[in-house]
Image 1 (tube, rainbow, N blue to C red):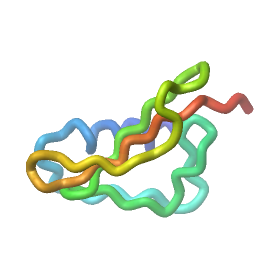
Image 2 (image 1 turned 60 degrees about the horizontal axis):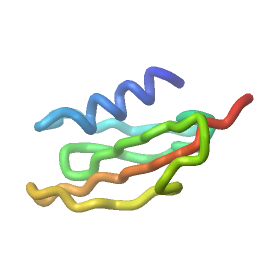
Image 3 (image 1 turned 30 degrees about the vertical axis):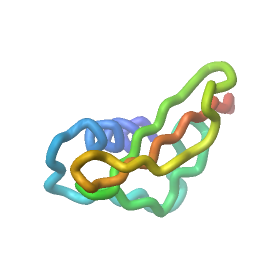
Length: 80
């Protein structure tokens, strides 16, 4: 579970991603379902986890200057 989060953050912070990251079934980030999503150099993902209520709750696609897009998610951590 933590490995998937680290991979997603690494892919988002990398200038040029040479690999494609695919989340299979039953992938959770902070208790939220992140299954069946694919990120590569043109489609990136950033997940921000908050202990309290996030200022901009939810996910949105943002355009980057190089023509790629980033899915930015502000999520509240769920306790299990």
